[in-house]
Image (cartoon, rainbow, N blue to C red; front, side, top):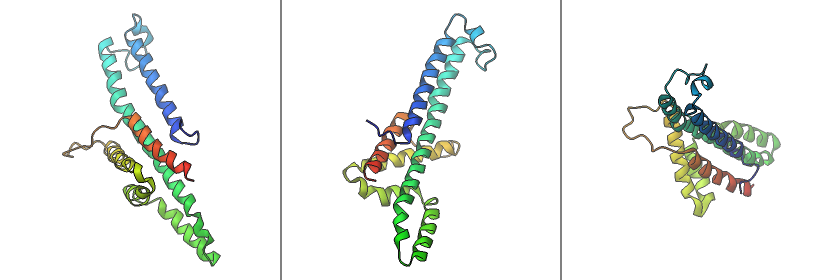
Amino acid sequence: MINPNNPLLPLWQHYEIAKDAFEIANKVVTHSDCHNLLDGTCLGSQSSRDAKNSLRETFQQQVNDLFVISFWATFERFLRDYLQEKGTSLQKTVPAVLGQALYTVFEGEVEYWNLENILENILKDFLGPQKVLISQAKHILHYRNWVAHGKNPKIKTPPSRVSPQFAYKTLGDIIELLIINQ
């Protein structure tokens, strides 16, 4: 059972709604009255077969990729916030003026930390026997970067596709472990 405080949960629900909308749209394009139902849409001028192919391509490629990007962005924000919250202990440094200055610098710098370094150098030991999640998260990050930067065709070996389900499960598992250990 996923923790209700896991920030990926609302995104997962949005993904499920998008999948349902895709299924509904698929039924519409094969409906006997599809031309009237699709009138005024970008699919309205296409044949039923072309419309179905457009839907499949859009959902399987574009929408899934956008959800992977969203899962990663939400995970990254959670992780940076988590680290900033853990760093509040720096404020206890004596003298207090130094403690506040240390935390102010730390809080700002966390925003610029490299995510691979965070995964490798901070979370790897923390995750212990579940450190396979680190390599999976790094794969999601590489795929996210490739997609978010235009799927550069010059890259000789683009990362293998990441499904929204895989991103949700992997990143959600890491978040769950962090939440449990707050």
